[in-house]
Image 1 (cartoon, rainbow, N blue to C red):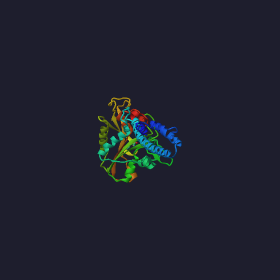
Image 2 (image 1 turned 90 degrees about the horizontal axis):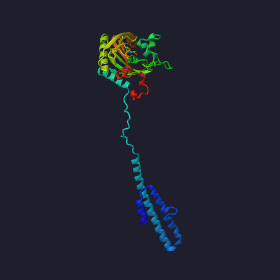
Image 3 (image 1 turned 30 degrees about the horizontal axis):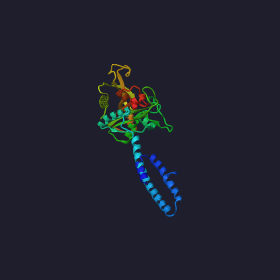
Image 4 (image 1 turned 90 degrees about the vertical axis):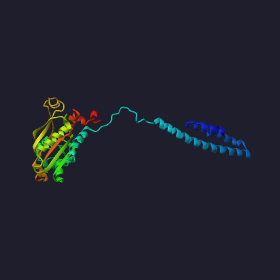
Length: 326
Ligand code: PHE
């Protein structure tokens, strides 16, 4: 027994332990054979030998179990050690970053929040009234062609601009108000500079009649565009939107060629960046506002982001180009 005990102590892995078990209690194990030999004994001798063997067996089993537990713990620790993955190992992955469109929206919003504008959001699915009618774009008005629309089967539509947020806000609140409304818009368009889904930021300021005018609009937009693009020249060009009168489109001197003329600005030296104007009274009438005046503006976020971050294909914002979205 002593030698078996020593053997068990010196075993270092589960295979050797199993082997030892076979040597002792296996078919031809020493203990099995010893039990078989009992048949050659009689009386007292047989009884005391049997007792001795049973005690030995009990001892062996206890030792065996103890050792088995010990080895299992050891082997588990070893396995964990071997399979340990060094997560700190640098294998050159890139870090993710926020999407340029979101970064640009944040940057734009920051400016207006600092001026106490309220952040508003509208839904993506609109009805004809909010997207067109209330904005002074009646049915069959040619201005609807400017915004080729996705219609849903139940007669609703995907908003073609963020201007319907103006209507929702004015229906809910009483003037004065200053709001900024960022979000996705949809038009049936797809090429180098158009995507069927893109983002706009809408601005609307309304106060009592005569309190806000074009000079305020001009001042704030000039300052805003210089905040975004830095050292540029801003120009207002007369234009048309059904919901503003008078209306203007705003250009900045080309950020790439500084106004000398290049491919990006079609050799004009100017880049068109937003639309704006004094809110048309027809719009105020459709929401029941009286004795107020206001201004509104709307800009395309992707266009801003392309000019600001120097990205030349609008579509790469929405495709798997990791240089842009990664
Ligand atoms: N909604 C206009 C567009 O999508 C932009 C705009 C907003 C113009 C507000 C004037 C005032 O083109």
